[in-house]
Length: 223
Image (cartoon, rainbow, N blue to C red):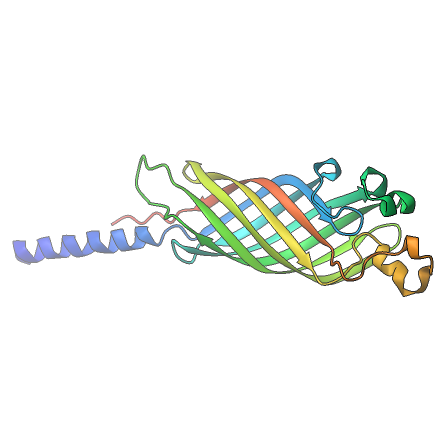
């Protein structure tokens, strides 16, 4: 083999190495700790007073530098009490509840910035995500399983030391029912007392805020 051919072969191998390295950041696993907040008939806005602990774990496939697909599991709870409201109707109703919940979700994530596979680079990116999930919950009135929710949220992640990253995320789980607090169930014959009923036109939702830690499996390719 001539010297020129050797140089071309070496350049080709280096090119392959760079190409493989650019695709190395694919699989990521992690978990987080945070809390959930409910929004519905008993708390018409997100009230930090009702913040309850929650935890999650996830698998993320970084398909490209911009798009990722994530599957996750989470457990937690939410609660609310009428007597903290300034609404005279809620004070007269004086209803309270506490629910436990679990969920499984799949979402698509868009990263605004690229993670660069270079030494001494401080990688970070804000991102948005949206998807679909199944959740179950239990409270004193209702026990429900395999209901649909629709996660939508924002986050930011920062690579503290490769392959470890930390993140902060806020997401809302929109639902198509009014049963999270148990009041929606009362409108279907449990009681005819108007003051004990909920507003069926107001769909319940809950949020999940978490601090996350994740590990990326970088593929190391040697030429």
